[in-house]
Length: 295
Image 1 (spheres, rainbow, N blue to C red):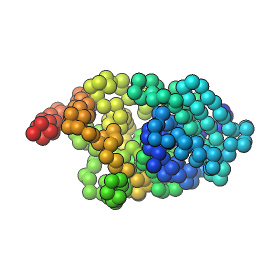
Image 2: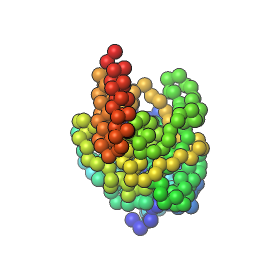
Image 3: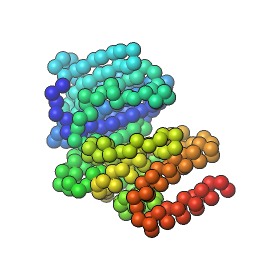
Image 4: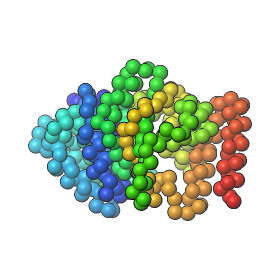
């Protein structure tokens, strides 16, 4: 493949059949001056999501251009690479896994590693979606002109699915300072569906024990803010969908406590390099947080 992609969009998805089309529409609406590739990995969904994705590709992507299209199938996956019919800067790599890799801790990105050598990375899981056609272009422009910044995120609208209710401009009332110490102390949620960051920062992420530490967006945020600056664009570009059951919404208090303990351990890991005052503040916050959870 000889396409020089500046940016890749990472979309990990599982059982998001009712929502994935919104996410894909958000990718395809992006107006950019550069080619970008959306890597959509469905981890063997059981709700028909793979059929939804396949149909979308058949309708909106050029599957006749044999100079670009790639189809591949193994006992592990089915892969399709294609270019959008009208948005000629938009390419999809769709990886439909035949069995669930997450449950057996099997890497998924290995199958698409030739597509990940890009300068920038954006994130959007299958249940969230973008609503601003210049999201990617705005963020790339910002990072291009601000070399000290490593991650830029934007404002969001939150959508509470079971109540059909929007919370507009979610970050507006939150006193986020966007410093490393602020993130260690408060572990703010910054809506990864709005993130765009320099891919080189991924190499700095420490290999923490997944049984003790949270290895998701909190780990990425604490790493990126340690080695670069985090910046905010006050423009709503995405909708973060709140579902009853997701990685941060739980069925039992035990699940919630385990999640909190992993985040605590991750914050403590990064606090080791912070000032004594920050360590003292964090200790107080963690004690107070633990007490509130065991009542």
